[in-house]
Image (cartoon, rainbow, N blue to C red; front, side, top):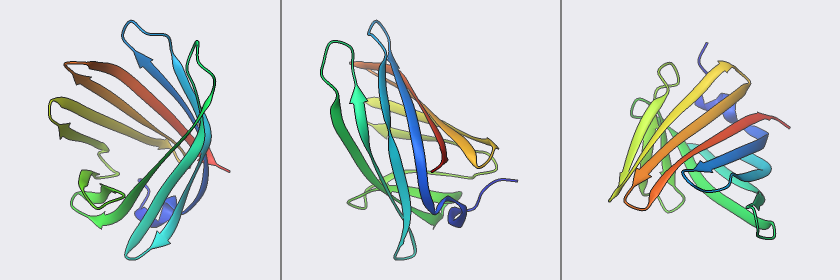
Length: 135
């Protein structure tokens, strides 16, 4: 059964790996909170990004998730469109000229889930895999 927007509400642990072509692997470890805001959920993640040869750094990001489109609409914190997806067929794309972002969500082990991004562009070529589980 595919999750609905309300199923994401709450706190999650995130473990992320970023594999860029020709670069050492980077890792992110942190947490995310989906909290009600307006007609949807505000997604806020915070954690530590570790890149080989550099000291760990604090990293964070914020998105808004709401119902609509194909099922769930994800926008940037400022309201700009990011992507939307149907949890039953969870794939989406985002074009940020000149870069192509493609995501595949995997909810088959819900409430453990994954977001796998493939990013390609003139100066980008990486895969970012984020694994989520309830805190």
